[in-house]
Amino acid sequence: MKKIVFFALIAVVLTSCISTKEITYLQPNSLSKSDSIKISNENSKPYRIQANDILSINIKALDQKLVEMFSTSTQGGAAQMQLSPQNLYFNGYTVDDHGNIRVPILGEVNVLGYTADEVRIKIEKKLLEEYFKKEANIFVTVKLAGLRYVINGEIGRPGMGVLYQDRATIMEAIANSGDIPTTGNRKEVQIIRKFPYGFETYSIDLTDENALNSPYFYIQPNDYIIIKPLKQKTWGTGITGVQSVATIMTAISLITTLLVLSKTL
Image (cartoon, rainbow, N blue to C red; front, side, top):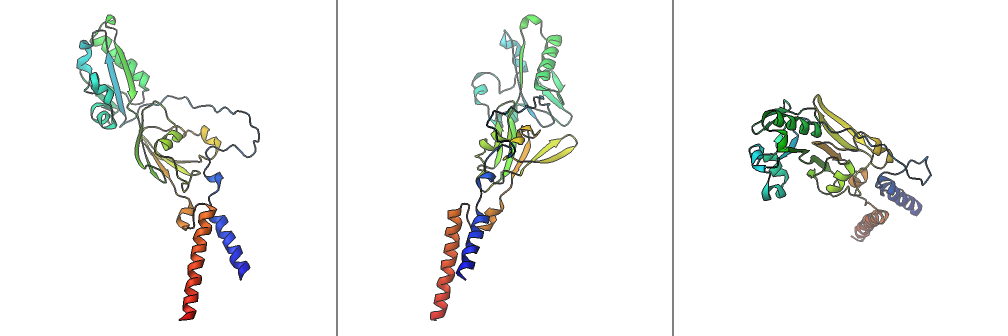
């Protein structure tokens, strides 16, 4: 009986513990034992603007008063230094379902499928053709108003996150949201991405270094990321071996106490 209890205890501990292989990011391939530096070819294709994206557009000139009529309330002065997701939502340029943005004076400008740099060139050209001469030295900057994403599940801080940079990886998004706890499944991180034709779902294994080559390693605006829990979380036996042993010993002690009390009554 003691042997049966002992082996049962060992089996439960081994199956309930979470190994380091399940929580370590970007592990090298088991077939490759070399310590040499590996270079991963980065997918350098620029992001093309989609519906519901928010753009930040700033127009400058030698005489700033000449371009004030093209500016929004987020540009210029102290307001420019206090940009937030809320300010950008109300004062940025939101791409509508037809792929257009409404720029003061210029009216509707189609940006669907363009890169940020192509939109900049388009606006500069329109300004020079219709309103200014070359001597005005028009300077236009166009940027995505942050990479917005939503992350839920086994994550430190679930909810919407914003990264103020042109490109960001899923690792940066996870780090920005408090990282995945030990009970999170890093091998099946689910990404739901919106396209003009609908939604596309993909799973990426962040414990494998080959994730660097995935087209989903770099996030896009409005990505929805789901971190699934590991099975060990629902078993309730503990995350580490010490926790599992402590939990099982407590249960055995409780059962033994009940048996002794039942015999004395």
